[in-house]
Amino acid sequence: MDSEPVDASEAHDAEARSSTFAERYDRLVGYVGGHSDPEDPRQVLAMQMVLHIPKAEQPDRTDLLNAAASAVALLCLDERSGGDGPWAGPMDAWCDARIRKIARRARGAHWEAAQDVPGVTAGCGTASARAIVPGPVGETDKRIARLQIGGTEISGEAAGSQAPAGPMLWVNPTLEMTVGKLAAQVGHASMLAVKLMDRDQAAQWFSAGCPVSVRDASRSDWDRLLTADADGTAVAVRDAGFTEIAPGSVTVIAETSRAARTTSD
Image 1 (cartoon, rainbow, N blue to C red):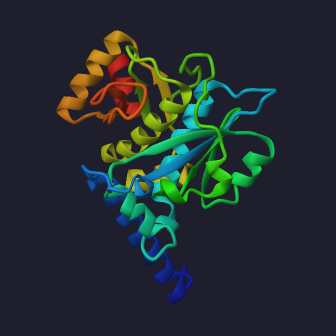
Image 2 (image 1 turned 45 degrees about the horizontal axis):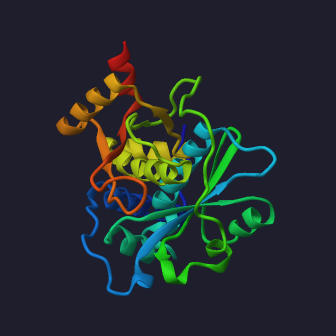
């Protein structure tokens, strides 16, 4: 059977998309971040994260953390974040700086307004979260700047009953963190998790919506995960210590769900 001819423009577009994804993948795999802040604190770069927390029916804690982590990864790997895309410059600048995320809560009309600010929204079960294209904190869009930062707390544990989806993001069992702080940490972990994938695996993960499974680690799990981080089979988030916890604290460790299953078998 003769194959149908491929339109040259379609082939070019596919190649461009593939090339751009490679750039976005390489940026996450290779970034090390900066080590100093600008003199003007208003010029500090940060990714704003908006957590949808309705007043009447709060989302499941695990769902919310999963959604937050997926939103960050989706934004980093979005076509608009690479190549000649409109978000490429801000994303490059942010990845070259000290990585910062600021989690805020929203509901009702304020949540709807946040959807019009450039970024990506992800959902998981009962929860939704939006990652906003990074920029200077002093220039944060008013629709985001008005949202509450403190007091973002939801009771419950990060424990899921379903089979793991995507990378496992294990939370340090010895640290106390608000859900807002933890949302920023798992968001960082979802970025680092790309280091555990080859380019094809990362592309498939992105196409699936960057699903993750946030879990509270047991003490024994945590010891194993620290060893896995040391030998390169997992990757840890070490917090800068700007809020809530001491500098250098390991907050979350990412590993592939396959590695987690192999260890538990």
